[in-house]
Structures are given as structure tokens and as C-alpha cells.
Amino acid sequence: MKRALIVLIGFLLLLAGLNRLRVKQSSAQTSSQAGTKPSLTEARHGFTTKLVRQVAQNKPVPSPPRQLFRSVRYDSPAGRLAAYVSQPPKDGRRHPAIVWVIGGFGNDLGTTPWREASPDDDQSASAFRKAGIVTMYPSFRGGNDNPGYQEGFFGEVDDVLAAADYLAKQDFVDPGRIYLGGHSTGGTLALLAAESSGRFRAVFAFGPVEDVAGYGPKNLFFDTSNRQELALRSPKLWLHSIKNPTFVFEGTESPGNLSSLRSLERASSNPMVQFYPVPGFDHFSILSPMTRLLATKVLNDSGPATNIAFTKEELAGLKVR
Image (cartoon, rainbow, N blue to C red; front, side, top):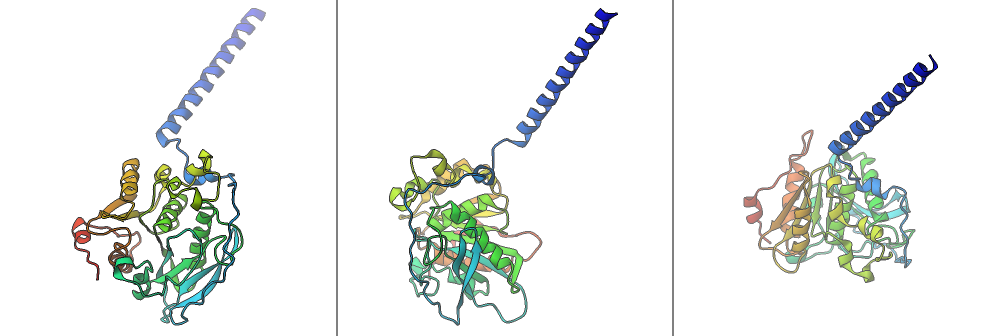
């Protein structure tokens, strides 16, 4: 009797072990099917960047023309940061809006949003404002007289998302039609923001790089020998995280970051991300005609889901005024 009981217990333990093995195998199979590659948000969770230089601009925010912009402060994890927001239409309706990130390494605001510029190099993105689209130009931590220090494409991602949160609370903004765009370093930051959140209806990244190490240690404020610091700032590694339509543009002429666009395109298997090398333009001349085209598409993008798309013919037909 005792021996039979021991055999029975052994059998039950074996059966339990087999069940645990089946559960583990089933779980592994489910993980394999779902994909175990972490998102950028998951990879960033709990990570604190370590700066080797504490850089803050400590300079005032220029006063914008009142007929065009309001100077505002928006709340971000770094504190209250400066921004320009175009004057709202006085029609009592909610309008589409875009957060536009100007290129450069200062995290600051200058006069670019309203300064007259040549069509060959118009970085103002004023086509959106002129079309009646609410346009917000945020500065970031460490820029102008903002709190905090520049982190070089890390904490600034949180600032971009906080800028969108600010816009969504304005009674003249349609919270379901907030877009994001940026040029050069601003394009890189826009791409990282797209990889970190699905809160934008669509994202337009002009001339980003695939790896911020290419900007050089002079323009970066963290330990560039630390692979994790670099990885969490490199858009090429996180394209799979993008959930909303994202469009990457660059001119095919020099100067430009065409090789980065090609590298990003080769690395991506995400249908939400589309890459457009635009013939006949360079890193700067592409901005004026493309932002005009984008403004038209944003105004017509009013359905439940974005209908923004591009054809080779319309891109080939772009002209600098």
C-alpha cells in the first residue's frame, strides 16, 4: 500500500512537471508569435541618462510678433518650457494643429518662425500657419531660460510629448488632429517621439539621421562611449515601435542625409513608416514646397483616420517658388 502511494505521488509530480513544461512552451510560442522586441518606451523605462556636460543656454526668449504668435509656457517633466503658438482663428471652432521642431542643437527658440527666408532654405514651416493650421514651436530643457540641461535627444522626447499635451487642452485645437513635424535634428527628434508615442495623428520627419552618434561628441552631452545611451537615442533601432503614420523625407541632392534615409528604410519592416527621397531638392530646399503640400493634406485630413498619402508624381512635380 505504501509503495503504491509512493508510485502515485511520483506519477502526480511527473504529470505536474509535464504541465509546467507545456505552459512554458505555450508561453514561449506566444511570445515568439507576438515578438519579444521591446519598444523604445519599454527600453527607456527606468533609465536615467548621465550627462558628461551640463549645458543650459540661459538666454531670453525673443518676443514674437503679436499678430502672428503668442509666447507661452508648457509643462514638461523638466518644468515650464517656452514655446510659440500661432494666434488662434477667431471662429469658435477646433482646428488641426502641428508641433514643429526646428533644427539645431540649442533646444532654444529664435526668430526663425517669422523671419523672411529664401525659398531655397525656409526652415520656418510657416506654410502650416498660413494655411490656418495651429502651429506650435516648442523649446526644450536647457534651451533659452528653461529649467534643466540639454540631454541630446533623450529627455527632449518627453518635452515634445508634453507640447502635444498642451495643444490638446486648447479650446481651439482638435485634440484628435495633432501632428508632429521637424527638420534635421528636429526630424530626428520627431522620429524618436513617433517611436515613443502613438498620440500624433501623423508625423513628418525631414532629414533625420539613423544614429545620433553621427552628430559628433561636440553636439552631444552624454557619454557617447556608452552603447545604451546611444541606442536609446538612435531612431534606426526602434522603427518597429511606431504605431501611427510616419513619413520620412529627404532631398536627393547634396547636402543632405539621404544615406540616413536609405539606412532607415532598409532597417524598417513597419508599414506605418514610409520613406520618400524627393528628387531635385537638398536638405533645405525640400522644406518650402513640401510643407506647402503637407499643409494642404492636413487640411483635407478630417476623417476618422488619417488619409495622408503621397504619389511619386506629385513629389516629382514639386517646385521651389
